[in-house]
Length: 244
Image 1 (cartoon, helix red, strand yellow):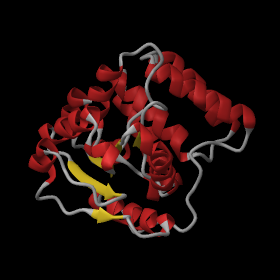
Image 2: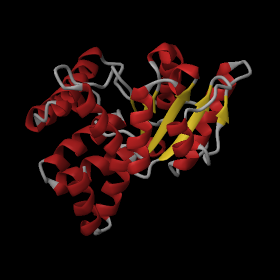
Image 3: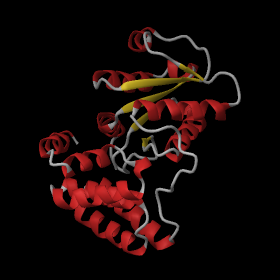
């Protein structure tokens, strides 16, 4: 599904990267992180390139391992070429390699060297939300899945169909999820995205607007474009559809 943030990290720092992802998503920021969001059977390089292209911001979990990682350097280079905002989250004072120094030498870093990590994670969430034009951190984040087991399962199946580009099947599963629990904003947002992929703009407007009404704090790229369409700015929606 659509996401706001791409998380770049070295494998050795996966526990911290997972904590970054969990913190951001608890604050209404959708993230893309490997291997969780890599579709089974899809080549990693292809998945990474597509995810960076769809992101609005990149968070780099920086350590000596990341500094020495060719894969991390490649991801940063992709983000640099896409003119993404890159937020380095520094776990230790490790030297930058020449390539990384060229790309990040002038970027302001967010230090997370001194404990506790949780304090720095909250600061990171605040900075990311500011970059994305969102309000201050949420005190009581709303869940992105229903507490109803069948509604949750239908929602997750719908997301899986979406990733396989089976948009009609995704819409069917998400519709059933909404019928079982019509209170989850993400279900409407995700179904709206599927309608956008099918160029069903009226249906997309309806779902994205409903998602914003249910939970304005979690209105993301898709929601904001839905709002633009609902105000009659169809050219803006068309440009977004072409770049999606």
